[in-house]
Length: 201
Image (cartoon, rainbow, N blue to C red; front, top):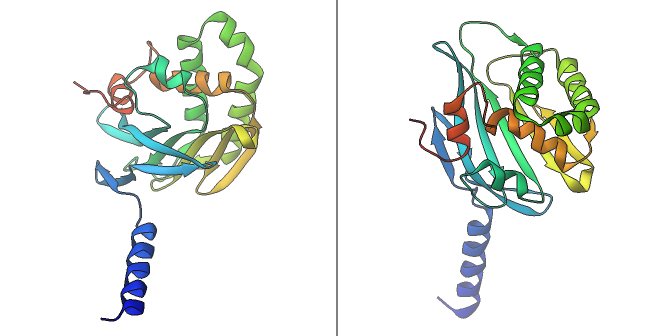
């Protein structure tokens, strides 16, 4: 093989390596990327968990952060983009009203935020819940992403790639939202442990 051909082969190999997708982590039969890019920042899969009601799963969730951590306070303190991804997996029923998510957000904020925090984010919680309500219903296979994107103005809700509502300002709001899943008085401790990369036992 002459030199130009060697160089060409090397370029092709490099291009192939660059184009390789992020490695996937298998959880509950679904693949989650172990890294992704948001606003030019590389995020890592911190952990994944399952929200279950009685014996039925409702959704799988994955938390992406700039740096892995196992404590809620360290999650909240990290600046820059973050993502909570939710994949609807509920069986047996055709779909579910997004009012169930509204109730969960309201209850989680009330239980896990201080009075001062609740007062500070109250109007923005209403704004977020209005966007969720507008979605209407979700069904098995739907993908929800709740991203904190500082460069775009704050928290952005997308469902199957479509943006709902306007960006909600403030990292304090995103922290209040994450406390629904990671706070001390959550509804599902196994989901909390999974998102924090801890043992769910």
